Image: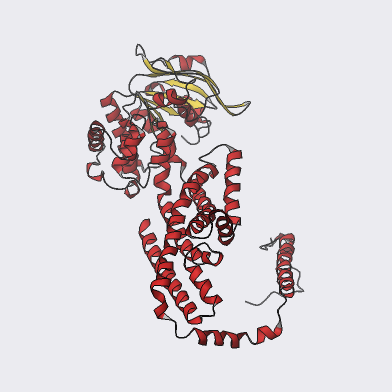
Length: 264
Length: 276
């Protein structure tokens, strides 16, 4: 939409952790899903991306850690360009970027502890992971994180024995295990009931604030986005059409983002 | 509850929607399938040339054989049959273990979600089909020609026949794995090896052990006949006994095989039930 909407955004003074410039993604040539996205993510707090399904929110997040290959544009994490990386360089960059998934993506048949420790796979040599000889410091941190997410007594249970909310807590612990510079959350609460969703978001906000990790979160629930995010990014049709603090998000913005108003 | 008289004009008839499970074309093609099956059976029966006289006295011959087999020559069991039986188990076990050294790489290559290079998928699948298309007796004949008669030929025959079976089931198990956990580990910066070890292996582990036990069970039965072509094991003893018309000994060997196969089946079923 208008340039004035996006211009209000960049959080004043704060150095940004992540800078995206002119990001384009075409799964099919000539049919862009992302049409030149510009976004600067501040070094702390939660940035929520809202928008209708199929508008490229998930693609945007996955371009950052290159689970999806961007077609054009630049993505810089603390000044380091991510788009050109491959092989070892890409793995070293990925381990600085934590990710939480809608379907948790835990390894169901492994214990909670092993799932959390697998967040260290980018750091630990393969033989150590194979023999389950993780460094003592990692195990210490894993226990600490399990305490922090409220699952200390579940360390030895298999992941498939947990409820949805518990699984997402393990997912958060696994992502923080990386000691990431930034955390991506792709619809982390969409598979949870409303109460559990709030609890998980509360936890995510608290832990990332304590560790000083900025978060980008894709979220369908506008009310939750406004409640927890410091900043809202509204997307529609593959472009950013709103970028600003939650207080500034008004009805006409939502109408522009989602289209129509019967749902409001 | 009276049926509507057929002759009476029904004003809503054109509005009624009719439902049939199959379209006319589907119905005809089903009939054609049945026709082909019947024709194939008729053709097969005509071509196998059953000699009515032989068919007629078959029950008599069978009874005669059973009488000659009774009582089984139990004294013959130790050591001749016993040693051959142990050798058979060794052939089955070594063959199964050895087959995995070939089947695992081929399965990884054949699974489309693990190996993204299409020509390699096809090549691996071709290898697996080739292994399966040759019967273990034929493999045994080949390896007897290479290694000479004995258990070594049997081990290789079992291994090469098993590769196709194990590789196919394993590659299917790999293709059925959930992509999510792998993606999560990749996002955490894990290498390909890390993804396989912590994302894929835990998912295929039950299938892997299930397939291994199942194949070992089959191989115990298969290795029992390999001796017929000189590839070691109890088949050799069976062949000798049949050639010399020592039917009491044949009975002993058959009973020994039956006992071992039953035992293997019981053990495998027990273990598999605990795997998941």
